[in-house]
Amino acid sequence: MMNLLINVDHVGTLRNAREESFPDPVRAAARCEQAGADGIVFHLREDRRHIRERDVHLLNQTVEGKLDFELSTDEEVVSICCDVAPDLATLVPERREEVTTEGGLDVVSDPDRLKNAIAQLYDAGVEQVSLFVDPVQEQIEAAAQTKANCVELHTGDYADAPTEEARMQEIERLAHAASVAHEAGLRVHAGHGLDYNNVPLFRERVPHVAEVSIGFAVMARAMLVGMDPAVRDMRATVKGY
Image (cartoon, rainbow, N blue to C red; front, side, top):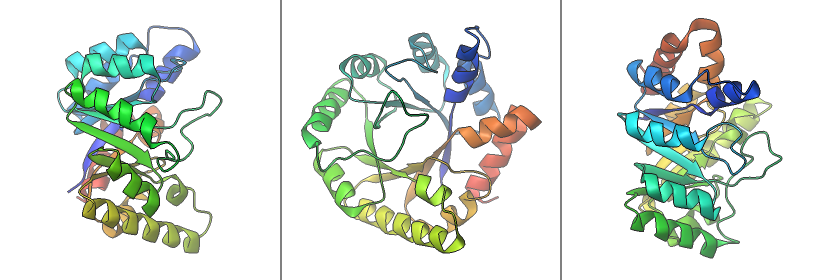
């Protein structure tokens, strides 16, 4: 059964839009866990557009479930992650002008930079290090060579598929990628664009997925119905209750 990790970045985005002290991503994370989330995800970007260092340290102190620290290979951010030593560090691509993460890492083209960051994270006591990759066999095989022990499959193309035919093609790509990762000895995670409508097919058709990271869909729903029911409904969807 897949675990559900909730991304609280968008709470920080709303707070920072007005340069206020609220809403607080740390308090939001606590509400998510109280409502049944198995853990919390955040992305400390180089430009600090949503999560700030204060949030990082408080989340590390207060989150009771699994804590997933998403980061680029920027030296300063890697150093902060090493200081925190979360349960999971997920290396992701990052461009300052992007609205959200756009696709997976190109592990094939630049493995050495990733290997260096991964080694630092392990040395600091981070037990799980994941690479965010597209569902492409070559990228997954390259990820295994970096000594990462997890991959997070990018589900954005599946979530954004314009037709039913395209959606089924993407789910088959994800299923194959998950099997490749599993056979390579990697723990399989997934995320990006997953929501209340597309999770059921993903859950049924993609094997070996230990956990999913979902943020925007839950926070958007929470604005209308409240955090507790939004998280409970997503938990039920992910678990297949």
